[in-house]
Amino acid sequence: MDFYEINMANINRRLQLGLDRLKQDYELTQVDVGDLEEFTVQGRVHRVQQYEIKGVGNLLVMTNPLQGHMQMDTFTVTPYYKNLPLFTTDYIYMEEKRMFLNEIYSLVDYQDDLYLSYINLFKENSRITENLPDMPVKSCWYDDIRPVLVAKQAASDNDDLIISQFAANLETFIEMEKASPFLDDSAYQAKWNCNYEYARRLVDDGGVSTNLFVESLGAERTKRFFYSVFFAPDRYRRDN
Image (cartoon, rainbow, N blue to C red; front, side, top):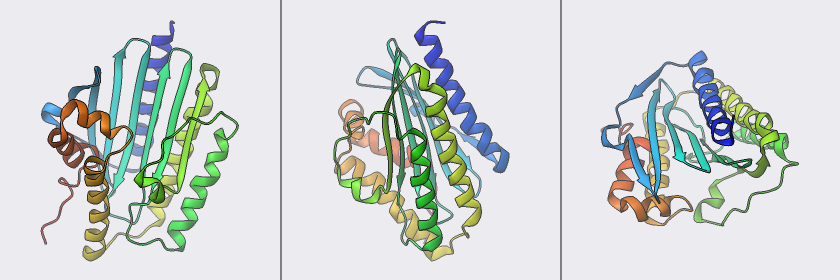
């Protein structure tokens, strides 16, 4: 296989691993994303799938498969029903080179001992790829709410290792979800507010990748994508 085929196989392997693992414990329902199923950002085609994870929240799966020497995939879980962090991952393949992000964002109204114990487990998981070279990351307003960041560079012979980083973090997220109680109506609203404000600020205040979306799609379409599909606060809004 050439590098394009190898890299697409890695993308499919990681995303299928994530979907299959979630389906072991949850009911997943695919959501019709309408005209946001495919769009172009900075000349790169983005293909989008959205799922509702019953009792958990929103799942966004996005691929950029048609970019010649570069392919990319995104797997993001935005929880709503429990006091859980945002779990978002991006893997970029450029022939034999790789860059990847595993990020945990504390989009929560409170951080109790249970919550913090699992944040520490995510930090422990970061040791899996600690020996890989760091990927430069620009500072941004959300740094203060991101307690765990794995941003690394790798080569093709690290493919199994970097996918194992994702698998370990997803396993920890599922364990955390199982250990956490459901939120009451008031706490649900507070959690929803955290998710909504994060999505809003990404568009209004900017973000490293969000800025590219705004430049290509415009602020309003980007906001619609974030509110209805990516983080989906519109879908999980409850009438007061």
